[in-house]
Amino acid sequence: MGEAGRHLAEIEASEGAAGNISVCMRWPIEPRTHFLVIDEIELPQPVPELAGATFLVTGSGRRLREIIDEPTASIACIVVNQDGEAGKLYTSHQRRFERVTSEFNSHLAVHYDQICSSGTNFHAVIHAQPVHLTYLSHIPRYQGEQYLNTHLLRWQPETIVNLPEGIGFIPFRIPSSPELMAANVESLRKHRIVIWAKHGVMARSDVSVKRAADRVEYAETAAKYEYINLCAGEIGEGLNTEEIRQICKTFNVQQNIF
Ligand SMILES: [Zn+2]
Image 1 (cartoon, rainbow, N blue to C red):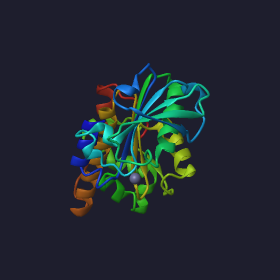
Image 2 (cartoon, protein in one colour; image 1 turned 135 degrees about the vertical axis):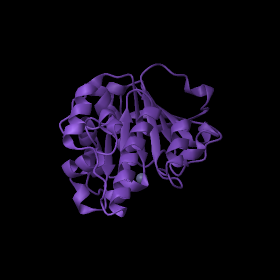
Image 3 (tube, helix red, strand yellow; image 1 turned 60 degrees about the horizontal axis):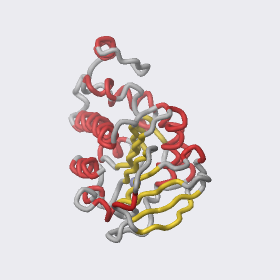
């Protein structure tokens, strides 16, 4: 979480205290080696299948780039009770936040949906605010997934390989709202990363936090190319449909964007 947080700041995807990170682990963990303060917390939604699971979640207002310096100042640990409706909140005496991130409802809902459908015992979710992706989401023609993906996934061969389902798109929703939460669950069933219009992105991985951060970086790099091309008067060709299909054939990538 620390390395991913620092890198997200390096690629200009986490200004100030923007962005948040969480992981869900379904193996037994002893939180009290790092988190000695214990409270009860009501969960944003019941998650009965995740009874006993452990979450590490960034605190509200903490900077992702500082997690690595003093993790327990920025991270809370939540262990879900047996009823699946509440949990034990473990924090450190070094904690420098009041509550966990206000986007925890979306994090929890996405973890729950993904874990119930795939059975994975580890899952990571990141919300970040990469500049170029977010800027493009303000331009009407990029607000449809087909236009967005055919334009962003054309600049480097790796992009379609790493994001074969493309990038999802959610119209503007109020931060932390139930509407944003529901839209995240829906879109992240089909995609590994989704744009929140006029706000940022959410990415997931069942491998590692850094893999989720990579997805933010691949999508943001694609957006950066697109932005450069717009500024240059759209003189770049991009990979054409035939070239992208050949790449997919060579690397055995299943996709239905091109
Ligand atoms: Zn945000």
